[in-house]
Every structure is written in structure tokens, then in C-alpha cells.
Image (cartoon, helix red, strand yellow):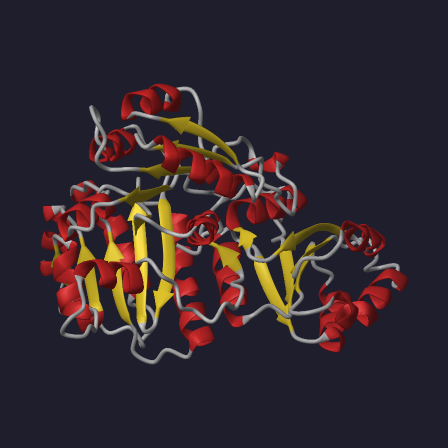
Length: 424
């Protein structure tokens, strides 16, 4: 007689709609039953009646709001040993430790890094989650009514699945009814083997009915992307363009005197969302390249920031180094592109500040080399060049932002922190 296999059960309490449905989809894919509850009374009734293998609690504002639930769980001999994972706002370590007596085994500060979160669930349930580990940069930010999606390095199905929920969350938080969407994919070179991944990307972008196909533009240098869109009637209306100017002219609202540089700075490189904290990060812990996610703490504290400053002007190098010192960042200074590339072979930098026009190896060549070697360090181009061709070329080659010299130190630091915190 075959053994009866009992499904694992998870109870999700008080999660936001985006977070709840995202968890439900991922857990269901792993054949795990999901029950949900709202409020501490409903939560304890479902906890004591279902006796799940794990409780996931999402706290909106304060731990104290669930104190009654914690105490009931602790006093009941049937529920006291059920493990809990909590996500919520930042709290002190002493508060985290005080939760141990209630069976809390992990506390995640929002926004959660998806891969650590599910690895923790897998360890508790003794179930290995299938995870796509393809290296991929997938980031999203909002400017007014325009959503910018950047995809580089590769196509990760986990991140593309998450994108659907992040878009809905972003639109809900900012009350968007009919946003415009720009998908920037100039880093990717695709073929027919990537067809299913492209379909997943576009299906998830269009999953929310507030996003109309006519309002979606894809910036891609890849002919296969256009062929796939043209061959699918359900994607009719999505336009593929090959340069940034086409995108700006077709989708970005601008005045008659607006320059290409102003549009890039004001529309593409600046976020105007309302600052509400999301549930889950698009960046994974594995993106840092620092090892197994099992070694990660619930609240990650970044290592010392290291900045590479590449500029042939000694005064600029010293000024930038002094500016970054104010935020306890260590700077390595390079007078030429050759010096920097030699150092970059053996050292990973948190951030790169790069001039464009230098003797020998230019900034353009450095950007090309970084992309060829899949260097993940974000790049801020800081140059006197204000020509639209230079700006577009740098962004196409993977620079995160472009600042025209000179800038006040606080402007550079603010832009650097926006990039490091995933705002750009």
C-alpha cells in the first residue's frame, strides 16, 4: 500500500494583496497549501483549527498590534511550537530577540529579498524550492505616469514573475490609471530559445488591465524581440524602438524647448513615486555575489562602500573622494582608464564614477569592457560632455545615470545613494 503524502500547509496573516498573491502563487507551485487570515482574531482561529506547518505574518506598522495573537499562540500547547516568519518595518535587535519565545524564527525587514525569504521557508518546511538562478538585473522606477523597467545581463523567471506584482503594487500606491511603460533591454541579445522568457515578460507586464499595449514601448537592439512581438496578436500595439530618442519622442511628454539631456535627467533618471515602501525587492541577495543566501542575516548590513573614481582631472578626483568620505565610503582614484581596468580585474566596487573623454581608453570603451565582462557595479557618468549622442550612448552601454559637470557634492552623493538603494 502506497504511503499517503501529506501536503505542507502555510498560514499567511495580514499580508498586503500584492504580497499575499505573490506568496500564494509561489507556494502553490511547490505543492504547498495556503490559507490566509486578516486580523488577530481570525488569525488565531485559523491557526488553532488548521495547525499549519508555518505561519507567515506581515506586519504593517507595529508588532504591538499582534501582541494578543502572540500571547494566545504561546499559551496554547497545540500552537506554541508552530514556527513563524515575520516581515515588517525596521525594529531594534532587542525587539527581534523578544519574539523568539513566540516561535518566531526569522524577522525580515521590508522590502524583502525574495531569494533569502524562500530559502528560509524551504529550510523550515524541509522543502527545496526550485529557483531560477540566471544572473539578471531587473529594476523598476516611476516618473510621473511613466514606469521604467530595466532588464540586463539575462532573463530570470523568478524576477519576471515578481514583476507582475510589483507593477500592480506601484500603480496602487501611486494611484495610476493608465501608465506608460518603457522596457529598456539594450543589454540583451536574444534568439528563439529565449521566446518563452520574452512571452513571460510581456504577459506579466500586461497582466494588469491598467497597462494598455499601446502605451508600452520596448527599447531593444535585438531583432528577435521585434519579430516575436510582431508575430503575436496579443502583443499588438507594443512598439519596439532601437534608440532612446525614439522612446522620448513617442512616449515622454515635453515642452517645445526641452533638450534631450533635460528629458533624460527629468524623466528617465529621476524617480517620482510617493516613497511608499514595497513588500519585496527586485534585487536578490544572490545578486551581490557574496555567497550562499543561507549565510545572510534577516537584516542585511552592507559592507563598507568602495567607490572607483576614474577621471584624468586630479582636482575632480580629490573633490569626489572628499565628498564620498562624508558617508564613510572609501575611494580608489584612477587617472586613466587603463589603471582602472587593471584594478577592476581583481576588485569589485560598490559604485563607479566615470569620466568619458580621457587620454587613451575612453569612458565609452570602459563601459563596453564592463558589459562584456558582466561587471555588476553601477556606473555614474560624470562628464563635461552635454551632447545628446554622448548621453544616449552611455545609457545604452549600461550607465545608471549621467551627470554633467560641475555638480554640487550633495547632488552626486544623493544620486549615488539612490542608485545603491535601488531607487534608480
